[in-house]
Image 1 (cartoon, rainbow, N blue to C red):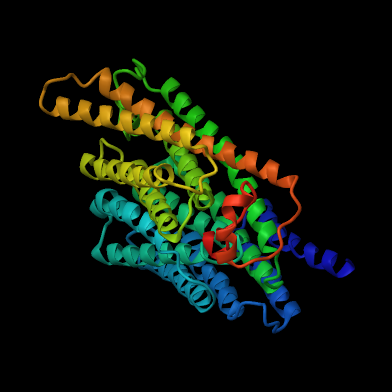
Image 2: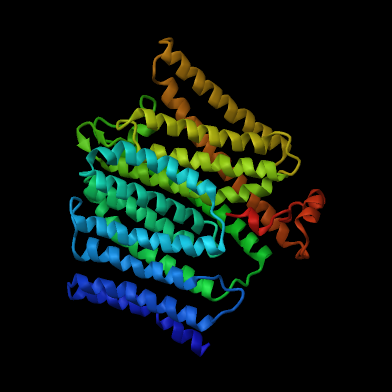
Length: 470
């Protein structure tokens, strides 16, 4: 216990360095934050030695953390501008960090191709539509394309790692890079305040991933799976509620003469310029609501595997949610007043992915935890709303129906129904978890035997293996 307390005190080092840099107003001292994290990661690796359960190449991951100091030197210390060679040096420094992390992940884990689909499809559109025209040089365009690709691959590998701290850290680093693009390239000044906080949290997440990996891979698979189901279900209830609240607040803060939900689409809240106001508060609230909703869906998506029977259905669910998340990201990053074509592609991706998941879970599913009546009611309702919405759009295209109030109203009913559909599955999963608490712990068994006995053992969590989770 004494040894553990001593190691825990090392976490004070990065915050001491950060505090000194703020108190003394010396930006060079900012590097002490990363140095402190390097000390923590290095000590954790040395303490654990060469245990067989410890993943290989941890020192490579440690070197990736150290390589971020190169990017910090050019972008934070030197304040390199977009048109300078030093900015390319900063991009190269962080690119080297991603290469080292990819090397570590590739040696120990498998890449999650679904994350690659969601990130590259949406951020490729964002880069092409919004950043490409305003970047000052072809060299910078090429450098950022390479960096964006490396970053997306790195995040996809991190989601396949055993320690989810890596996914947290590199996901936040990806988000921080988007904030930098918005503030420095697109000149959205309000985003600059988010860059530092998300970047520091990202480095802490990566360090925590190194520390947890150095401690070994021991875990209780069943306990970890049940804990994930509990967390994801509760987070879905919270995330769905917060998303709706953000949309309502965005409607409230819509610039004069105000937002009429029966006259405008929900995506109108996210436009970059509304009634002469550039990036009004409602656009930020809309983006926050979308990102919270996207995060909620992505986090809860693996839990849907326990609602279906068979690997094919589970694969459809995984790729369907990946398509849905990629489309929602594209809608968020490319507002309709910037490029309606790509915004429309995002809408099609989101509806296609969500529809595939709904279809697989609802039809002829003998393993679902929701009753047959409940599944068919949700299926019938959502398909009816989609059919009515598409019919309204078609009639509008042929000038047989005015745009409002039918189309905007139906869109909001569809979005609210999808959110409530997700929440209903979270409620069902929480119900089964509470019922499972009264059962004795299940003995370990193979996947084949678990699925064969699933019919008689529901609602206990069976038929799930570690590979079923992202």
